[in-house]
Length: 508
Image 1: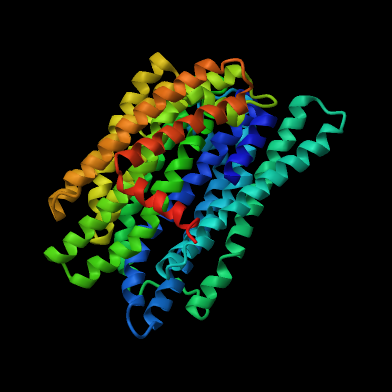
Image 2: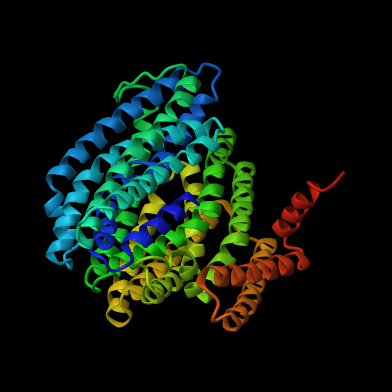
């Protein structure tokens, strides 16, 4: 939610087609590549299963030593890569944003140099997440990024207020606000790890920062980590390709992709990432406890199926809403200041295209976690490479016809290929992951979502003259009420469970 507030402030100051809007999106994408290669996804998949197994022993010394060694190696690797990024910022920017004009290119280079240290800091934050999640501490590592958002918001508001009172041209004001946002982002990364390290220190009884390859479990983590980095590299390469293609769609192309991706990420993070994050440590324990065989396989299958059903219950309606109500959502969220109705039309089209692949994006990590729990990190990489080829080819073809929305649609189709093949491969290993009851629950969410979307479209047409925010609230409220009522009437398990939880608060 704070991420949305940050983006609302960003839209107010920069709009969609300004030089800082495109430059900051591109600059943030580049160091984020390093962060994502070394942090949350790859570290969770390789470090948590090994650390969880060692931590199950009565003697925790080996687990503590492993944690310190991995942190040392991560700090060393991220530091080297950050220095390389600082030195090679002009060359990297030229490759990634070839379609930028010279003012956009120069500002992007400056922002890349400021933002690159953030990559190393976020890797340390991801290590904290791995340690805390293994000890079933989920709130702190997922609440800490709020500080990252707050720091960026403060940076923009402070600079915007300060320079608005100075006799500077508008372009110069926006340039300085963009620099303030970049420095605030780096400061937020420092704050994010500062609040997590004390809890990790307490759980580990101190941190022995020793980048050693000889300690027990380190080689297992690295052997599992290499394929994961390759897999994450495929995903990051896909994002970089989107940015590269977007730079050729004209002013606002890269920024429109960024705005739409941030809306898409909200339901994926709330329901997809959260369910997967809680599931991976438990999947790892179940896979290691049984030593293989039918019983642990059935436990894995059941847990993955429940996770899928819970993700679907929330993400399918989110996907339908983003497709059917994209303009109403974008207008309510962003249409302020320099973000105009024309910007709403472009970003809304991109959001609708991303909505097509939202379910695949939300569930692919859950299915991949099933492979990670069984110490198979190679299969998801092979599937991700195939999906990259598909999404890149389609994005290039569709971009020539549809512009930025075509890039998003190609990406959505590619992620569905990724999810489908992960599910198929997992079913071959542990039996059919999704069975009759799971598909019935999926059908209920789909039917209810379509009917709710139709009702909300009707409300949108009746409220065409209403300002964006109340109109967006009205259509989304109708959508949510109709969807909840229909899934409850059709006895969807998660609808029933949610209703029982809500009514329990009112019981005497």
